[in-house]
Each structure stands twice: as C-alpha cells, then as structure tokens.
Amino acid sequence: MSRKTATERRFIAVAAVIWFMLSVVLPVVNRPDVHVVGIPLLWFWVLVWVFAVPILLTIAYYVLEVRP
Image (cartoon, rainbow, N blue to C red):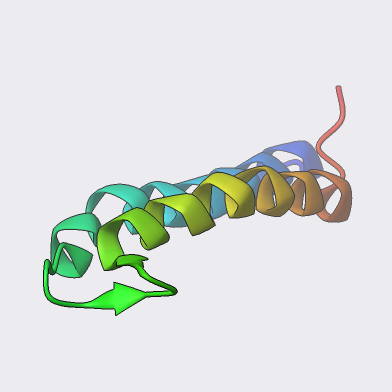
C-alpha cells in the first residue's frame, strides 16, 4: 500500500466520523426538552458542526498532507 493511499484512507476516516456525527447521532440529540444556551439541543448540535467541519477537515488536510 502506498503512502498516498494510506493518507487518503485516514482522511476518509475523518470525513466518515463527521458524517456519522451529523447523520447517525442526529436523532439521538433530537430532544425538544433539552436546551443549550437558550436554543434546542438539535439546533445547537448542527450549529456546532457547521463550524467544526471546515476546521476539522482543514486540520486533517494539513496534518495528513493530502496533496496532489
């Protein structure tokens, strides 16, 4: 297995964790009675991930050196 292939697989693993947190865990955090900072937990969860996804993917890009 070449270094590029292993790096690409690690990057895909990071992206898969993000997908998991935004799609599979979403029904778990859909609780109407729980509020964080005055907004429902579901909205807070999605808002956090809107900001976290670009940051995490940028870090993964530079740490794993996924470059053509």
